[in-house]
Image 1: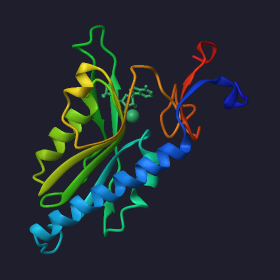
Image 2 (image 1 turned 120 degrees about the horizontal axis):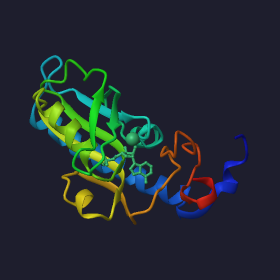
Image 3 (image 1 turned 45 degrees about the horizontal axis):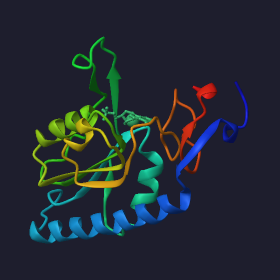
Image 4 (image 1 turned 60 degrees about the vertical axis):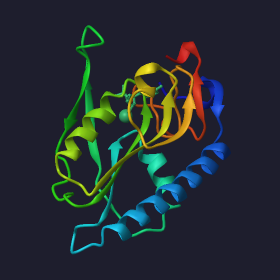
Length: 192
Ligand code: IMP
Ligand code: MG
């Protein structure tokens, strides 16, 4: 139903200014780390390339902000992961939808996602990309939920740790909506 999405907001968890400041800081930190790596492993042809691998669709706004504070020569190769429902937590999972970038062997790869929840998405993508033998492989998420599964998932860069609530905005969706809200918010129960 059409309407003003602002009316569906319950609480603002992290506002746009805090997001912008933290993402710029993360970008500078990641860029410094990647630059150090590319110098340590000097490049010949495609080896040594920096390749960002954002997971669609939730990461798009985070990615757009992040890369503008990373003044490095880089490629962007988007991928898509779909989750499949299962009746138990054990049987639920994530699967790659489409192709992995073909030529990432020897590259410095950074996986970018919106939120680390159960960790299935990051674990899956990390494993699939590791099989392609990148020179280095890092993961970066805007948000990480304060739950044991998320905390136990290896992740190199985290924007914010957040409470275990359903969050939308800044790229994160509920049923495909609310990605365009500039702040990270929770929704009123009537909206869900
Ligand atoms: P994981 O595989 O369980 O870590 O889930 C990660 C994916 O679930 C994210 O890429 C999001 O698409 C989605 N997700 C998990 N928690 C939230 C949330 O609070 N708001 C919106 N999407 C979420
Ligand atoms: Mg997602």
